[in-house]
Image 1 (cartoon, rainbow, N blue to C red):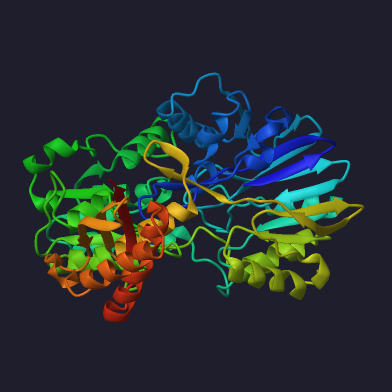
Image 2 (cartoon, helix red, strand yellow):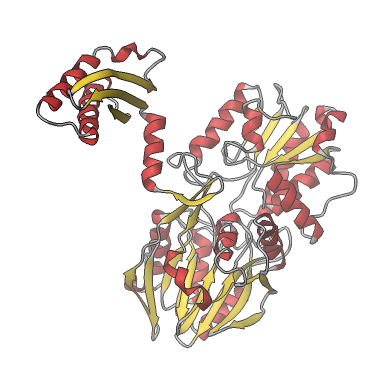
Length: 530
């Protein structure tokens, strides 16, 4: 999510989500914080959406909760996918503005031009933003596939034209900046998929992103060529492919699709399953298959599973967990590491160099990537002649001023994450996540003690209960006398406040657990006064 400001007006480019990692127990989604602009909702002229992936549109419904009528600008497919999300969130009164390739529209002080770019989802755009302060070109996610499946290539002529006009700030996709050369064309996957279909004698499952229309089209074509029916598995897959088919982006031959409930009417070699779960998401269809928890699909030895996607950084352990689970069931797992079943949707270093040489920007700000990707992208810009001081490495919250053709960092605002946990948004804090991690990794101990404040005597307890230390609480028999001694000594010294006595308990048992078990569990002492 990027926010541009000119003369008191705001323009937002993309508004996506992050997906939780193992360090975010219980979290479903991670949103950008809107606190910085919360009191300026009326200043927002539009939200420009470069394409329909979750990491670019997923947080829009949460932004619309604060102002439903913010104009949403994007391509036909992008807006259609977003409308499904808005409908699920039951938000009314939204305003959309569909744009086409090479179209120019104006919102407030912002003159926008949309350029076609090639990506792993159809209808992606780069956007040029003109103001009196200068011209900004934001690539969105892009690559330069010269033989794309849909024939829609990246508009390099438009990039060059803007370069002749003078691009003051070039915001460039950095995801593949460390990868040398050029990204492999999508159509190179077709022979590998065809081989998988030709050699698979039983059930075949292909897992990919629920928005990867091109990949689904390739799987559909291969299934038809080899006489297999196709069934979609996963709510987002069914929804997105229905939208893509209705809009003409996905071409499904007649009598190819079947319902999941009818899958048992066909023999295993007559069916191909297109599923969600390529990133090892715990509740996805593929994960449930790997754990033998899926209500309908039970994998058998000899089945083939294709992971037709890349590994998003941070998801590696989850993906390998699913691969191991599938392998234990006897499935043949085909993935990017052992077959050409996926190519990236992002420009590699050769394409980025090409873009810099075409555009010849005055300033560069790499976007969309981790720190190493941003630095690698900046190095590419410098190699093409961009001065090092004008290749800006920005973190979340960095404020950049663009003035008279020069961009520089001028400050930083707080852009902490907002965690979505079930129905709650923002209630989960870093402190709560830390507590959850401790509970999951170190265990839990509760100690309940009843004292008589008048006699300064222990009436009952301490009773110790724990999780993560085995089934038998007798493991704490050795520390119970130490707790009694510490409490009696504290009360003898005049300490009869429940809170202070709880601290005595926490310190004593915490020291004992650390010495004895090398653990730092969550300790909940309770002192009841009578």
